[in-house]
Amino acid sequence: MNPADDRQPLDRLRLLPWTSPDGKPCYLSADHDTSTLSRLADDIEAAQLHSGEQVLAGARAVLHDTNAGERAVRFALTRATESLEDLIRVAVSRGERLGHVASCSDSWGF
Image (cartoon, rainbow, N blue to C red):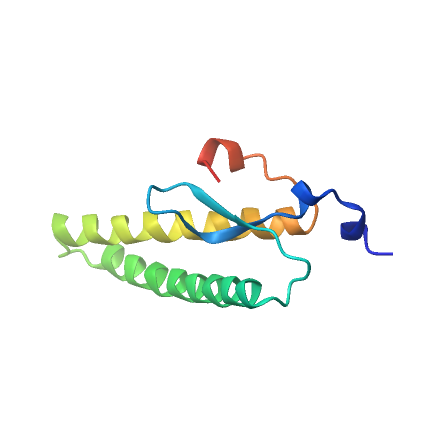
C-alpha cells in the first residue's frame, strides 16, 4: 500500500511551481499525478531547473570576470535570486510529495 494513499485531502495538495499574481503560493488538489495540470507543473519544474543551471553558469562567468561592472554583477545576482526562489519552491514541493516536511517552507512563504 502506498503511504500517500492514507493521507487526508489537505495533505495531498501539491505546491505548484508558480505563484498567484500577488505572489501567494498556488496549490493543486488532484486525484493522481498524471493529470494535465500535474504534468504541466512537472514540465515547468523541469524548465525552472534547467534555467537555474543556465543562470548559475552565467553568474559564475560574471564572478570570474575581473572587468565585470556593478551592473553586470547586480543583474547576475538578481537572476540568481529569482532562480533560487524557484528552485527552493520545487524542492519544497517535491519534499512534501515524498512525505518530508521542509522546515524552511514557512519562512520562505511557500
